[in-house]
Image (cartoon, rainbow, N blue to C red; front, side, top):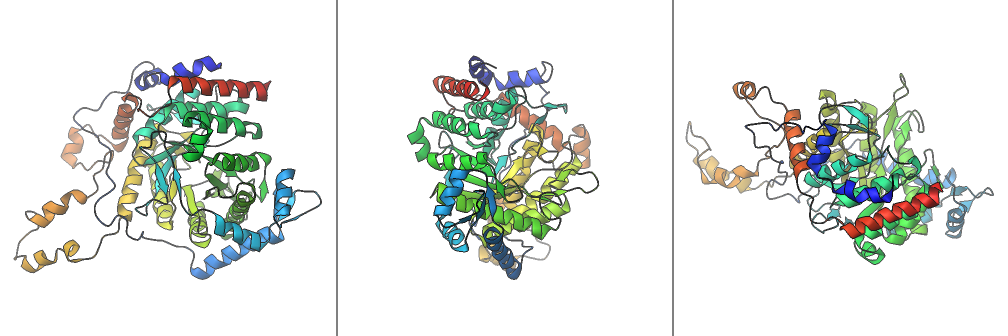
Length: 526
């Protein structure tokens, strides 16, 4: 694909893109229903203490913290980047003669943990959707899934995800109020070595919200940062208001590739927050027992905190444990199994309470291949448990089949689930007003609380669903047995029909980004 093709593809109307994916006909609107987005902020007390759930008692939590320090000090981690290993040696680490195995002393790890920022802001392009981490109301933000290779069209057809689909993901992410920021997927209709550059450039051009970078090659990292700088209005502007943040991943078990070390260095250079990501699979790249898998994640994330402290001091680090479990019958990785769910909750608790870090994990997703009943059950459990465990960011909006497929219809439902989860995390004040104490004393035999000032004052504080239905049998039959999927498709159609938001990069900036992608392809592909 040439650079000249990018701007017009990014500027096609969303309804045109949708029509192109459905043989020229957009999905029909559902008559008789005014489908709106749900409302999650439901009244006073939203900033009260967040309800908590914990697998780990204090003794178990402290044992995991201690073993994390001991594992990186005794076994150490492999850093496949000689200059980075040399910097760690100068900071006090013991580096083996092969210049790869790095043993991190506890003193340095504790120093790094003490120095890492406890708060950050993920900036949007316009400023309308800036995100404070942690969130002020003590709940969470959500983000779309990363890395999906497959795409499920609104009509249900599965195919490979292509560059035009990035504009759809951008439109959906921008329009869903619970989605705080958007990640670029893997696109299949461009050269594989530069797919991250094409996907990220298209996302920057099409979305107003904060964007998440996932590098695929070490040589691409600098070009990805240049794209972010162009969209932000220059390097100085990007450092002042980082409109993107970057994933850096461990290579489990306990190894760091050059690409991810480079991502930490470059993110620090440009002032981008780092999502320090560990992806252990129980029974595969980590012990089959979940505490062992959680220890692996904790040690790898703690190591990335040290790497950042040494190579990019002062850069915000968001701990990102993404826990999987191997299905021993099939060899498939699972993210929604009972074991993976337990591991995710423990890992969030370790990073949030044990290390005191901002924390990000999957809060949506399923192991099934479609937006079916199993998917809704699995992601509701994930969001409920990980949300109660204290995560600041719940990722995975729209993802299916263990994070390999994106479904925009599922993303709409995930937005609804996220709104519901944030609503039930709301903590009510216990006072005479919430108890309706005066009315309790005055209520007569056979009375009710429908027609009084207290009910009138508080009746709008209840959660109002958007895609979910509350129809009785007669209304359900009269609506043609309409379901949440029908509502989600109608909401999706309305999102894709909207005009592009005002905060997108202008045409000149889009051309500049296309030029950066072209320069990257010349340098990387020859």
